[in-house]
Length: 224
Length: 275
Image (spheres, rainbow over the protein chains, first blue to last red):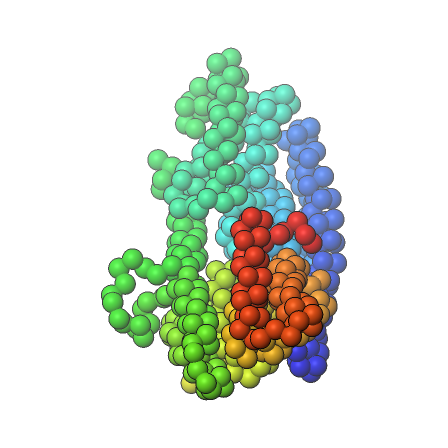
């Protein structure tokens, strides 16, 4: 091979290695923060509803600090190369979406939209070719919320919040019917969607238990 | 009715988004079934990686066939082989040109995995034609220049596709060298190829940590190299011991190379555990 060509190729590859190292560093930090957030959110299962706002507020600063990370990664990615590197942080990203969407549900009982999720994570529309939030990652995060809520339904009952499972049930059903509208290909998203029915079943059973024992007003249970 | 909820409106958006991505991926892999015959240039068609692979394979076989023809002027033969190979590859260029709109901007990296297999095969064929004509390795920029038309490059060439494509070239050169040995006057050519493949192998070695799958291909290259070397060895040994005529030598070498084909089959092709 021509020595000069050899050098050029080596320089190109070294440059890529540099980019990848820089991303790796930032992803490590991203992951660390997401773990802290998910750790705090684990406490929802033992937090009575009146102390919930306080718990959720304590997550906010950490979640918002992820903006530094997205900003950092976006400035590292060369133009047009978003899809080349995105696999490096999709896991952390899905974790962050999960946290943001779970908080949104616990605060307002509603589904966090994708644009709103981007906004919370400080993802700028202008970075489009370098950094964005793909639908797939967002949906992964939403599925994790459903997984978590099926646990929360049970624990809420233990804490004496009998109407919570009913609320969760109607929320989760809505998400589920949303997913059935998608033409998923045979990938991890599809498999995780397929497992959603078990979460649904679990929640249904809790709703059944509480309504059977007349722990919730019957009208509310029927409404779900 | 949950179907009218906010969530379902949101998900409707997602469906479009996901479908678009999946459809594009499909288009890049295979030709749509209702392709009208002979309308290569129409830009509504997105012909694909698989077609490029087929064309490239045909180009490689074409070159192999032509260089083995009987001729008194090997140089003219080589030039004709290279030219025919390139002509065949022009069909692949038309496909790349049609793929361009699917690969603009950040889309290139999104669908890079769909493009790579065909592209690497193309680079293999192109570098083979280049070697036959110039006895040299095609440069990175030369490949990028080939992936162009009057509107500029079809898409950016990645270093990894370039290197992986070239790595496949060594297998073709092995075939070329072995079949050349049995030809009159082909032996110097074979030893030249041998040196060239050896050079490729050592040049690529430094890139292996950076390019995924290159180390696997390096071991395939090592196998090809061994086969060429063994054939060269057979010639050297026999011709030094006896002063045998060229025709007899041709027979001996032919025997040696068939033996390799047989061991090849017994091992079941590539020896991957060899790394």
